[in-house]
Length: 339
Image (tube, rainbow, N blue to C red; front, side):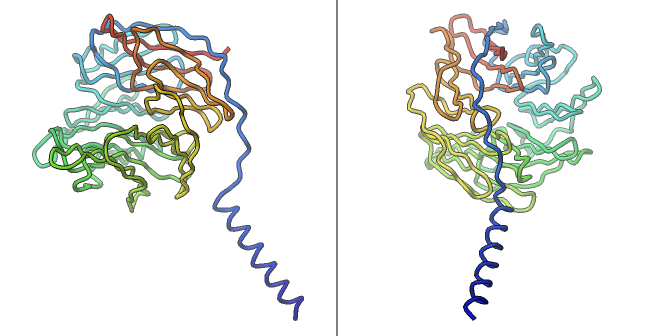
């Protein structure tokens, strides 16, 4: 009888271990990220045109957009050697970029989303919500046939968050989140096939609030919630979500929120980019900090007249980082190359 009981217990334990391994697969530990970047700085002489989104899949074709500027001044491209204006496009009021293998999507402040494919720009219809054009703040997707855009009405103190989806043919309104405010950031995890949204309610009547939402295509839930007053942002890195809250960085996946890293530097500005947990680039007011899995170190320091920007692009051996020159009013793009 004792042997039978032990056998049953052993089988149950093995089943629990097997299920645990299946739900949380082990991964090889990434190598420490390299720090041997050489940096150059390109000046974009667009006076007080502040660029807010970078995207590219190769170092020879990088895109950058700005909300401010004319239709021939707010989109720039990098061809591997130099930055130049993309003058073929009629796109105005650009806000964000997202691209796949075959397409580039450009969201706008005027209720339209443009698609660049086969060297041609095409526009969606102008989308309105309750008679007002939509601010499409951010986009992310799985492929050409599944792209999500987040936004809200282009008015002060907008109350309702809007999620639009493109199925490869057209954009359709998928969800209205009442009293959530603008959905100003969208990210996608390739590891669990879920989408993440930051919702910001700028409310003149009550305290401003920010929510981090998780969406599986059917259900949406709040992961974190806070009142205004400290850093709170997120980015996807290697399929995981990295969340900055105050001076801490959290790593999130499928309900598990790990208190990953504390930033004890006075100039931490919240954004985190990178390739994996041992190769993180951390936005600072005075430059760029690097975490290699063991320690933190500055790999780029700005001159006194340069301040941090809002966007970066991390490729296999290249990093593009936006900054702003307070003295001239021009944009600076730092380009780091691994040796």
